[in-house]
Length: 442
Ligand SMILES: Cc1cc2nc3c(=O)[nH]c(=O)nc-3n(C[C@H](O)[C@H](O)[C@H](O)COP(=O)(O)O)c2cc1C
Image (tube, rainbow, N blue to C red; front, side):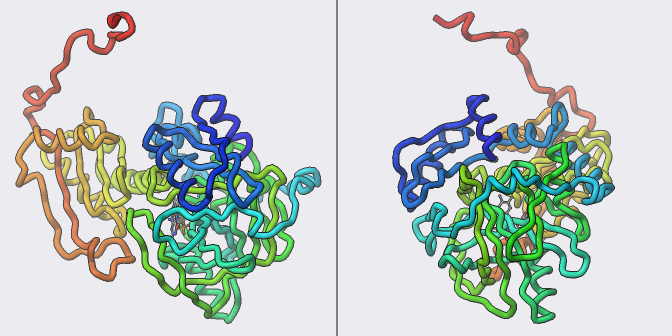
């Protein structure tokens, strides 16, 4: 985390707040303002109630995400799929190594109350860990998994956690519970980008997200043994909370301001019993504002890669996919090669992810899929409103949806009419790209 922050500072991508900041709402309010102003990360050096600083907005930039996975000239989707394929062909034994005694000496034991207790939204039940990555092993195979599950801070010994039913961690916990056992896990609260990005991935059930992290980092991952549970965690994690999910115990969690922009009300959710806390002396807590660009951009990017992989395997000419401004949408860029090509791409995208894809839009190769204005321009100017939009009724969507608010699909083929490319070619002004305004304005 420290070298990541230093790199952001060197690139001019870090804002710093030295004034004392109240972790209740004020820290989140300033983070929001920084996000409104641009894509900088923000470091709070003086957070009330704790010695530890807080960093936020680390991942709210698509360009930064591309840089962190080494995409170079490739799209995020292409590079992510390349890494995923290599991950599926690699083994943990080849990419993990024990951490040295010097690394171990960097850590001190402490308690949850040493850490900043950040309350983000007006109606949140209290402080939450939002960059909360849980690491656990599949109870039978031992395959390690990393996944995000926001955690409500109840006391030094208890967190309450919502485990989304489709996530691997929920399956591990259910398996342990069916045997009457607690599931041991480590909560990773401040880590290098390779761990964060790997935790965003939804790999096949038996694939290791530690291998993925090592491939993103481009080096072996040193691992440390936990003190109170049978688990090793990456040494690149600066704050580690050891504990276990209790079997057959659920307690009220929430309300909490979620990634869709509203509150999830109180629900009975899992209980994580804390057994040990340790952190680097110079640790910085990662506080992530849920539903903000920092939460959405990474989730969108890995979702887009999943849609891209599936669609490109079914249909030729798929160039890129974007799921912005929310994972409920997939915007697909194609090199149109035949009449109906856009509709084929829609069909393929729909089958790629049954939870999401509430809206699918396909555009031509000259449209900027990261700019919704450009996407809508293509729909509005390149053909009919009616026959290019299709509604599919009564199809279930996002799994947590008791009122069916996310049922149904809207699909739009916003590509231009086949055979009339010249008519719809974008107009240009000769020389526009070469103009440097500084040469012209007084
Ligand atoms: C930044 C970020 C935060 C997330 N927060 C949560 C969360 O609080 N609760 C949750 O159930 N899912 C959350 N998710 C979604 C999934 O947990 C996440 O994509 C997960 O890593 C899926 O892993 P799995 O398929 O290996 O289980 C979050 C995803 C991202 C990218």
